[in-house]
Image 1 (spheres, helix red, strand yellow):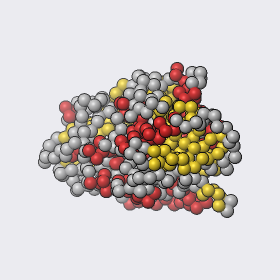
Image 2 (tube, helix red, strand yellow):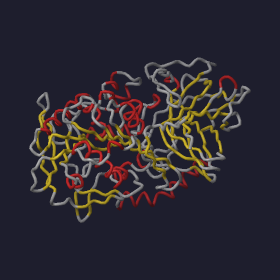
Image 3 (cartoon, helix red, strand yellow):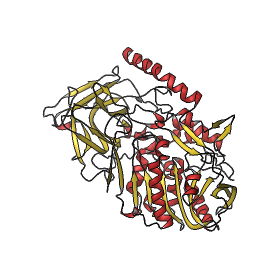
Image 4 (cartoon, rainbow, N blue to C red):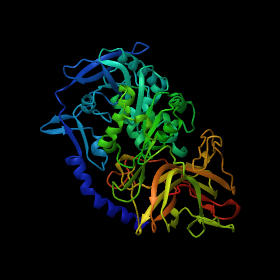
Length: 562
């Protein structure tokens, strides 16, 4: 315990100067004054089916009123919340200072929070529309987040836009985070003039992806986000209080889950492997479940904003929309469905990019690495029955394997555990990390954290019930419909889902599986993963893990043939 504290203190002191430079001086956000050739038409009024007026800004080329395709973003963050120059310094959204960025970000002063840059898109032949959702910014009404009503509002705005003289009748949607989530509810209603969507990292299941993964309440970012939205919008919904009060996956969550299978619009979805606390699972689920026969997946393991505003991402977004909104003969339809980014080293940029037809790739084979009582992962199941005791005083327990040849894992993992617990309930947090030369390789993670594991997952044992019809090897799906009691001395078999990733191991590198009873990282912004935090059901107890014989435990990995 003492050594762990010293390591954390040393890391904090090492990172403090860089953190202060980022917050107090200026993060790597480079804003340029908007071109005078792009004109902002403010507070245009679009009616919804119940008569509520929503207001939007349209960005169009100066002196050119010819109809063009439209790129729409819809969100609660305020369309007027744009960069502003004061005393020679650009005032930007505070989130850019709160969270570290692994690479510089460049956009114009017309660019709203997590929205496409209007200057880039207008110069590419589009009109850009930035919409305040109901109850936000300049729009009327009360904000009812993530609901079908929000989708209906966006549907009505899309159809209103299509009738404007500056629109050619073709509308697409683009944006990050909430600007991605708002696309699902609207697209599930299939507005006639919505021709394509590009949700760039957005959860699609608010329970499993964000607020209660594994049945454990997220009480860090959720509390912060709920508080900020209460200040920015007009709403009667306290999201943190609402989700705190509902432990099971009930109607509260169901009404905020879009019918992905109903979506027919072509889709390019970004599913990163670096936002496991928020958007990663939901984006990949959208790719898997959306009903459109024309869908593409763009993966990465970089920063959220630096990836979205990168030249490569813009080029692919533009080619996608040019094909579906302009009818460009650019070959997009023949492009492979998946851009797969595999982490193949330690430094940023050491990645392997492949273009494949599916995710996980077709050559993936679920492969079991068996837990042994000696703390190793074995490719052979232990024949003799054995157990491993994990007392309360021990902060975590781990198993390792060193690879003699190159191995690649692409897709979700699962930890299958057989265990006994002498308590009424317990939270388990599972991490899979890569080690090289005696130290763990840190990966990009949620909220700008750069010391994340390859993947992780979690489970409250009373929420262990599996949906067998929806589950598959490496990909169990938890029901979250009831609390299952734990009987004294009962041997439990639990399947803990771990988020998708894609990582290559080279000879001599080591995989380490860790099992914790609480969230892995400190909740502070310098060396921790601020603001991520999860509640704890951590009653004193001893855990006994079965590591051999008929009831062996295993880490099941999506191993590729190359």
